[in-house]
Length: 385
Image 1 (cartoon, rainbow, N blue to C red):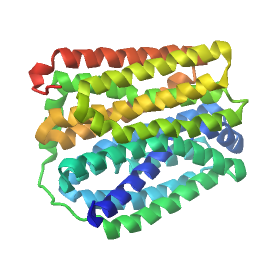
Image 2: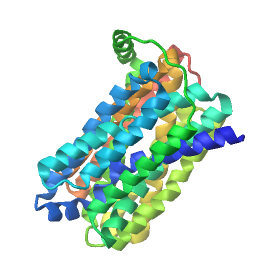
Image 3: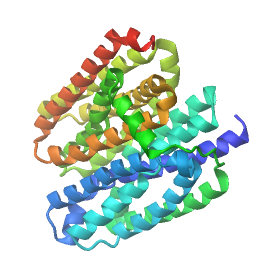
């Protein structure tokens, strides 16, 4: 690998990890924030959901602006805006200020994901592109665990506000790094009307709707799994910390997804991911009855492994199906992914742990059904295996 690729890939992957970390920072510290601001924990959950909703809006907004403004400009200046808005979260003093600043932060951080994926397609081809996409997606998944570990660890030894001051400094540093390191790409004159028409046409394609059906509950299931587990094991902080840490083992599987896709095809990879996810939920059911820590540790590793397979596989399917409309298709992917995620905490907080597991099982069976429809009708989109 040449230095040019390594330098750009390093910046984009670190950005991916640090941006995605803030999707998960609230999960371990709902109680700390509620206590500090003297508000109900349910209000903190609602404020957290505002981040996801506005993050999803930011994904759609910035992805469709990138062709006209420039992808480097969106990525770099988005980091600076994220630094400012993240710092504001740290000075929130009540529910409404937390809701508002967390929402602004989410919108600003939405400048990264779909733009970075499209930027990767512009800069690289072949193996380098596949490798960088795998690293970026691994970064997103790695952040699902790291974000929780950082927020819990920092809060344990200081205060929850320091979590957001820490990330504000990180984003400011990434702004400087990106401005110096990332190359500019060509700017295209694409009208908003054309982009809206393209999105409308994409939503009429049945095969993409099957993929988006999976996408809607994919990251939502990840949040639901750890959110419900955090409440269920609230009295055992050491086990919770261990579960999040060992989940990192599962993230490593996404690094090999590219080879697996080449070896057995997207559909078989999808079904392997669904099978692993269902197995992880069934093991969690057994843990409820036996209370053996090894079982829930195993469930956590398998669960993250499944998501690590499913996300890059679905991205590959959408990217291949959408052709020249890939940028808009990926922006829709990101919007739908986070739209589903914004709903997850609101639903999960109303359910018991066992009810949450039944919901997760239903989600993964749904993924299998959508994958089955894609496989049966694959000839129509000339995808092959």
